[in-house]
Length: 147
Image 1 (tube, rainbow, N blue to C red):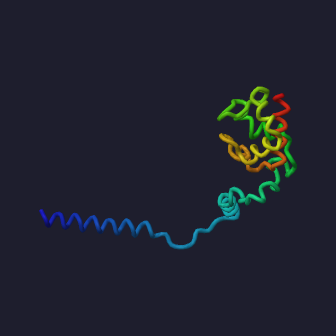
Image 2: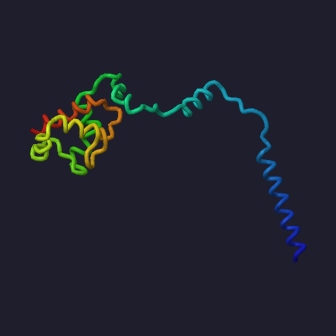
Image 3: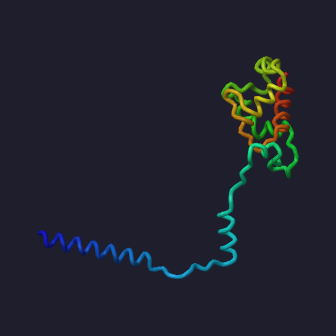
């Protein structure tokens, strides 16, 4: 029985070596065509760029050629989800009773909350490509629509 086990172990080792040798049998360089090179470069290109905190406020707005987006545009793309449903205590657009106490604190406080975050609202409402002026315009839009 011991002799059979040795033969089985030796056979398994031999087959493993053959398998490993077959896997590493590819020699030489892979040649890609021009279109394949281009497609590979596009797939491997970075998905975005890193902006430091000081650069974010001056970063061009996404999707409009670098111009400033209106308060309505910012609201529709970044604020609407939470402020239409009142998620995490967000005051709803068009609900004056939910905005009154906030408005009483002053616009500067509202702007600071929108930019820096407040309670359940993350900084910039997660609109990291929004400039401070765009966020202020969105706050103005919500206030105008809620008085």
